[in-house]
Amino acid sequence: MLTADQYIEPIRDYIVRHHLDGQSNLEAKTPLLEWGVIDSFALTDVLAFIEDEFDVAVPAEEITPENLRDLESIAGLLSRLD
Amino acid sequence: MPAQLLTEILHEGVRRNPLGIAVREPGAEITYGELDELVNRVARTLLERGVAPGDRVGVWMPKSIEAVAAMQAVLRVGAAYVPVDPLSPVARARQILTDSAVSACVTDPQRAAALSNAGHIRTLLLGKGGTGVEAMSAAPLPAAPASSDSLAYILYTSGSTGRPKGVCISHRNALAFIEWAVAELEPGPADRFSSHAPFHFDLSVLDLYAAFASGACVSLIPEGIAFVGARLVEFARRERITIWYSVPSALTMMMDTGGLLEAEPTSLRAIVFAGEPFPIAPLRRLRRRFPDARLLNLYGPTETNVCTYHEVFEIPTDQVSCVPIGRACSGDRVWAVKDDGHEAGIGETGELLVDGPTVMLGYWGRPAHEGPYRTGDIVQRLDLSNYAYLGRRDAMVKVRGHRVELGEVEAAVSAHPSVREAAAVAVGSGPDTRLVAAVSFRNGSSASLLDLKRECALRLPRYMIVHGLHELPALPRTPNGKVDRRALQTICEE
Image (cartoon, rainbow over all chains, first blue to last red; front, side, top):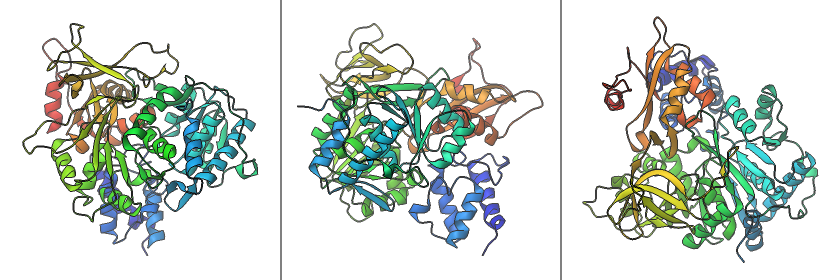
């Protein structure tokens, strides 16, 4: 069982490098969908990273705005799925 | 007699297929009979809260059975619905709800809390933890006073002024398109429509109403998987979708990353697309993969809904241009006008004009629209009645089917205090189209891409948030001092 930070750090790093300019300050509560950090399109890529990195399958019904709101909610989702 | 009001469409579905499934969402479904009752309950709750015929009512909640019921309930009380992107920040939602002067907003508890902090907007809660509409009677309501020219819904779209622009659609406008779509697709109770577009996007009108008109089922695609190729393919197969409707970008994703072309045969009998040109190579692959399905290219800005269509048959291997937007439909008349003001002849190009029953009432809060609608789209007249789309007159671009006014993006980015000067360009094509802000910062200051995204999110619809930032000491200029857009495009494409 990973801690919230152990989920958050790799995802933060991946999003900042691949979907931001590499230097933005992404916090655990920065709204990812509202601010267009991951749009519905980038989501494919981020989901693939998450499933690969944490060796988990995210069921379709869990891919909701609530679960993807920010890094913290993604971590919450992953610990529930673990 | 043809329908006069949009409310009659759901009544028709209830008559045809009372026990059949009307709407499905992940983990839930509702029959026509049950939906009819839920709509009556929500409508009574709206009346109790003081909503009156002629009012506007916001619907700001996740894409769901409840959201469908809310929109229908608003119509049943003789009011007009204003769907708001469920993922919009509260500032943007409030801007739209305030602009359209809603008398109430149907929402969920979490969003209602955000709204209450942002000023007074009366809310009605539906869904998880919502108010008990169950206490209300499910009996039919007396017909509300509305006519075919009454406002049915407002769809907010990109405007060039920085103020949101609400396209006002009447019952007659919507029905003209729906009746055409139903006649063309001939759906029946056994059909399953996909609902890919969000409800604030005009593509969603076909899915919901063509299904209701025929007692068919419409299956809602959750926002989260809307562009996740593999999930969409799995969804289409699991839900046994027979009529698919989306922007071409979604279909391209299904082919490129979702394995649509390799997957087991599906139940699709019609694949319908609109909102942006479909690149010819992936469309050819789609045509070959589904030789028995009908492929329809629909065209029309939000202001006129679908006003032309083209059915795609065999695509020659040497064809490099996109398929035409085709000929007029929905009872409309379309023609092209050249720069000299005369109608374009065969082979000539001009701006496409639309006149007929689908042309909007006008923009909310502005004078009523009169006469033909000028689309701003440049077309070539191919023969007596068919047209091909060539491009735009202005700086409007399309990002996955959504209209984006670059000037509006520039204004939002420029609102950041560190920005001295900014220009926006669209780079890439098809599903890979990205908005890049070219920015020169004030001396000694700067901003991250995230800062600029936040600035956009507060002012613009989500699809207009910039994807990239390109920092420059100064924007390139033409000899007469204007921003050199061509040079910028080259710089940002790199």
